[in-house]
Length: 101
Image 1: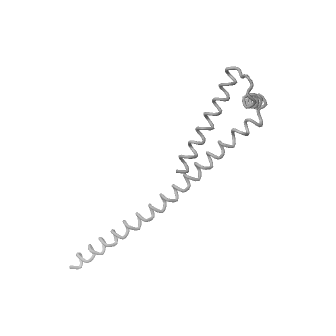
Image 2: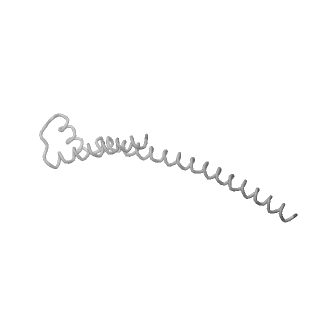
Image 3: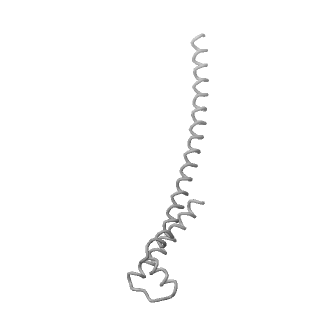
């Protein structure tokens, strides 16, 4: 009889330990998810800020961009630069949208 009581108590303690472990794991997963979201947003913000910084610090690229927006004729390589930057901007916007969802 004494062995049966010990087994019953051990089973109850084991069940409680499993529930406590699951609760701790859920809390940790939520914290990890929040950290991952924050890191993703920070990464997107940093990359989004890099594009205007490139325009401001690179005179050749700033010249190409200003001529494009003024409607002037561009060489093929200059047009490719502009289209590439537009694609990068759209990809960043897409990533920001996905991260927001």
